Image (cartoon, rainbow, N blue to C red):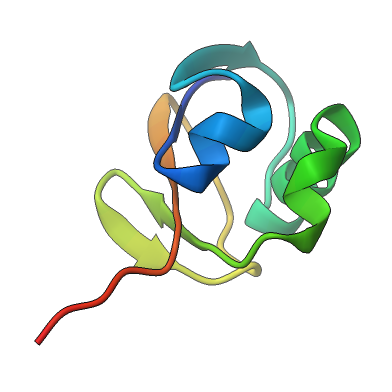
Amino acid sequence: MQLTIKYFGMLAEATSTAEERLQTDICSVADLLKKLKNQYPKLHDKDFKVAINQELVNNNYMINNEVEVALLPPFAGG
């Protein structure tokens, strides 16, 4: 499957990219995060949320088809 991975804020700095495409057979968010953290070791100490197609998901979420994955750093709001 084809994934578009978008990195924001400090995560873009940690990976030195704002966006990439990934061809993979990974099926869960947990598996994807493991792969990304191996590829980008600086992500290990970062706190962030994961959104799939603009909806926040947990690590058990199963990925299917072509999706957009966004890694979102903590943000302040009110």
